Length: 280
Image (cartoon, rainbow, N blue to C red; front, side, top):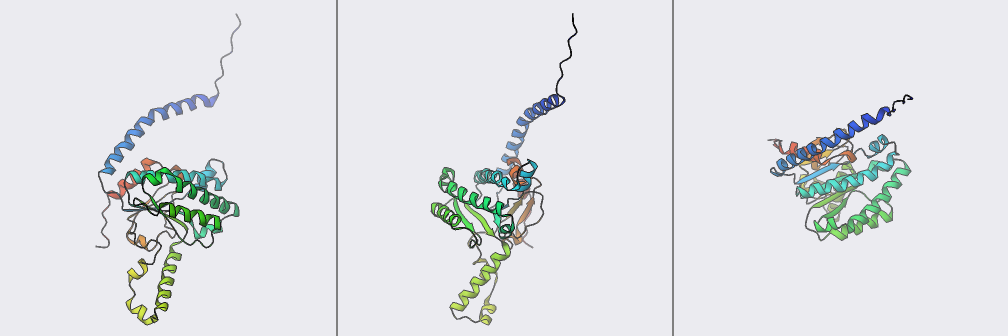
């Protein structure tokens, strides 16, 4: 009887099967861990105003072998997920930074891709049943003079579609820069003074912090008590510079599209354990 040759198993197949099996075994543990943290977080006080810097879309795409600008599609989907997590915790105000004034300096391909995404997602959000069911009010903040008309129209339609809502306030920072915001507030203050015939000396004599705060893009909204930034960068990069004077910060290593619910919950839990003294 002729000897049969042994069956050759590809080297990577057994390892791949073991990884898949290990992953399947871990899923229930991750689910249990996430639920345990969520229960703990729900017993505490959620932030009243959460700020988020959505960083790392391009690097996430490059790790997948894609063009950097393609990562923004993943980032958009993650933003919808995180918004739902915020709604579950009943966070009253959320501000997300999606496009800075400096981002106009990126490649034409990337900027055009983002502009198309802004139009697409603004129209989608204006009709999204989750937005209306949860009474989410959307406000777009920043300098918009450099945005194409079609983007401005879509953003205006989104704001109008949600202006009557009384639930969470979602600030979307687009064309935003913290220094520019302060400059615009000061300009507004100076123009108002000129229109009323107030002299520079009179304005200087009465000027206080409230005069600036009342003219910021976020006027009337409590300052953020908690700010999360993804991608491992440990800086604000100009995000809510005036408003973030007493904010708590949380810097997370993973790129924005890889930000999981368990990561979000651990961040909030970390915030809940901190003691905010406001300089006292």
